[in-house]
Image (tube, rainbow, N blue to C red; front, side, top):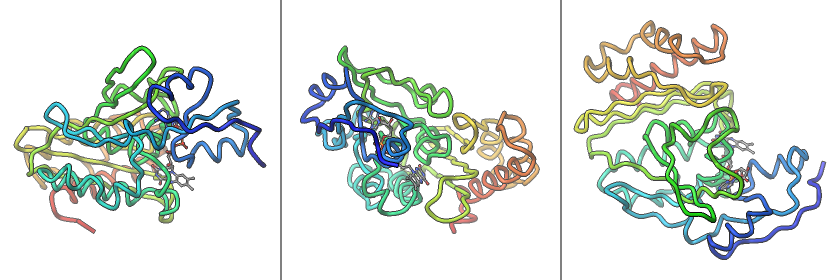
Length: 281
Ligand SMILES: Cc1cc2nc3c(=O)[nH]c(=O)nc-3n(C[C@H](O)[C@H](O)[C@H](O)COP(=O)(O)OP(=O)(O)OC[C@H]3O[C@@H](n4cnc5c(N)ncnc54)[C@H](O)[C@@H]3O)c2cc1C
């Protein structure tokens, strides 16, 4: 099937994009929207291309942390475009490269954007989980100004976000992490290039006393496993047992059956082992 007819307009500036979005839908890399257009799941009369906006491509230090332009593509991040910005936190840079490199396959990563992925809010999406684990906030611009929404409040359900009509996700704000931060990221999918069936992400920063552990690919937003994160931060590797991971998964509503929860628990265990330096494969 082909998409219904639509008008396409690249936006030259954020102000122009926001003006045009009063009667249009934004398109980033088109890697999720394209298939939806072709299947006629959406039929916008007009698309405004926001993938080249200077504002959405700017990456910089901001308020003691980092601001990553929403139009950065998965491939750019995979190739280390943020390494220089994140030179004080090479582990964070490595985590972002790892997450980006595991999304779909290269042709999709070449076009797909960080903002497009977050705005699409597929529960199995990699950035949705990773940015939650990193305690990121999102910069949302509209004709009436800019607001910042924590990632934990952004996605309220599958494909449902805090974005209002005409609002644009322009950037992702990451808090600064110390050089000693540790991370784990595990995604299970049947074959490389597919969405996750089960996923887990952990970001611990011992210097700052923070420990975040989440599971993804649920039927809604990622779920925090705070108790297990606290236990591992306090006790180290001895707290990483299959039973502890199963109990942690069972303590949240995953929407999965027993086998699905088991798969999640294995993802959690491997993610924590990776974080602890036991399993970097
Ligand atoms: C075969 C296949 C496999 C994939 N595998 C994975 C995977 O393993 N992991 C994964 O995470 N993703 C995967 N994806 C999705 C891919 O990462 C997309 O790039 C991403 O979901 C959408 O990004 P985009 O820039 O292409 O957004 P688009 O497709 O252009 O837009 C998606 C939605 O976001 C809106 N939007 C876009 N940009 C903005 C913005 N700046 N502000 C507000 N709204 C905006 C659009 O209006 C649309 O509703 C896969 C896709 C395909 C086709």
